[in-house]
Image 1: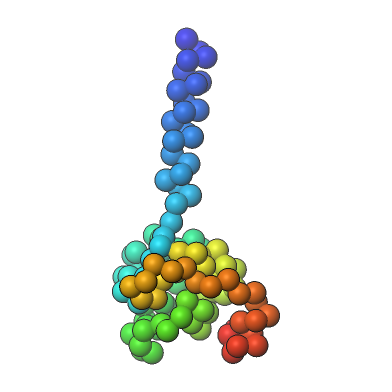
Image 2: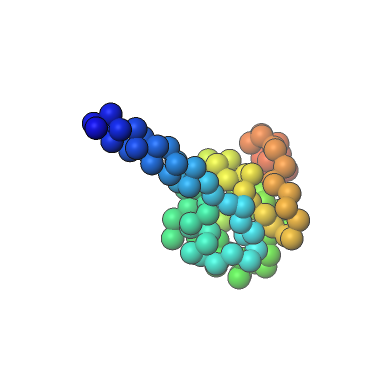
Length: 108
């Protein structure tokens, strides 16, 4: 009986892992703060609100890398979410680019 219980608990935990690990994709030009906080790793309510406020003040993001212009969004958060960031209707993830290339292109 004990072995069956353990197996059932392990199966339940294993089935929940994909739901916890899954996030995005999210269009940073149309998502509200709640969606941004829920879908982007390392982005909580305050950073999500900063993204929305930046977008309202400066207009839509032209590229995923523009997210780095938002105060509180750094390389680590951007790299965690690169594959899930969208800026338009196309379902293409942000292009891979290393930090040195972004800096030479004018990024932070």
